[in-house]
Image (spheres, rainbow, N blue to C red):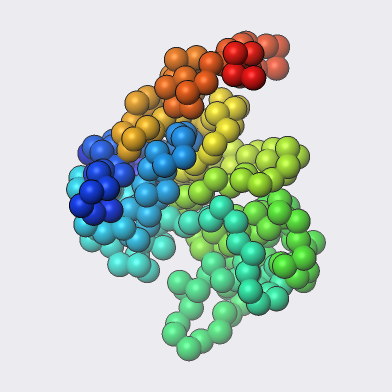
Length: 259
């Protein structure tokens, strides 16, 4: 078990209600766990709690059997890595330099990355299929290429749990497919992948587990094929949809009544 969430509750203060309300699920090694939910459901708040950015939560978060609340920032970084939704950057770093940033946890203060860190960064770029971009400017990459660099940076961090906040947001269909295929491949290598998505098809096609969140609580959790149906889509997104089995797999079609 990589991440265990038990009765997690969080509020942003008096008058706001609970952003998370007794949320419970597990994200296991060698699996892709997809978090589904409408805007404001609590997905980002969940990630902020796991990463230690939102303190004073109720309930419990365990990462590889250790209480997240007891971990230092460095210890937490050794267990899980965060891939943001997007990163435009300010300085004109190369792709290799961006990836090297993932190794800072193993570098002594006031020191520069050494051969081991450079090797880890280059291996991560190779794993993501973008080693040929090493000396390119990160600022001049496409959206899909940037997202692969952010994943490579997380791999270079040498954490076995990857937390991804909408990794395919603002990407075209081809780049979405490329990123999600990489997520699935990394899970098959033993990584625990915890990602949020606004596309329920991603859960059906690539995830091993789907956790559907609404109003801060899990209303469904389990194998996507088992828990994702027309009723769940309606409950999450307030639209009618049909889930159809095809020769190529499961597909979701919006109902004509929504048009």
